[in-house]
Image (cartoon, rainbow, N blue to C red; front, side):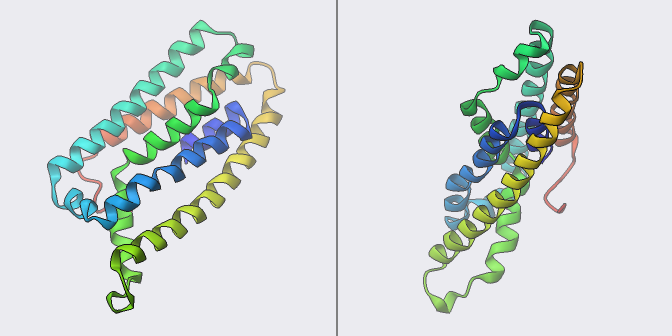
Length: 189
């Protein structure tokens, strides 16, 4: 959510919305993994869980460092142009795919609503997961648009973009470090 808000404030509603769409597109990978039982394996294997967590942490740290380096190479007027729609989509996709809590949540939440006597469990999981991802897109899209409009208002203030870049880089670095240093996030909500 911090990535989404940061994108909205710093780069506008369209770029933030593409980040939200990236979060949703991750469902094309996550939901089949859930239906095939890979999420159960991830929950049962501390090594696999840690590997995914560290991959996500490394990505966030790398993107945070890029933001700081880009800020030094560009002026405030040109820094907004550096985040393209495909990059925002990719960032949302990667952030969602490397967040182990997302798969664990799907694994813990969706099976409660599956009825084995009502037909294919796999199809039920895919259907329920699809509804959940589309609902999340509506909520995240609303956050993206709202933060984008707030960002538009703030962008008219002198030197705001420079400070926003610093905050965005710090948030990404902080989230990456938090994810890397957490001992076990499987039980967290």
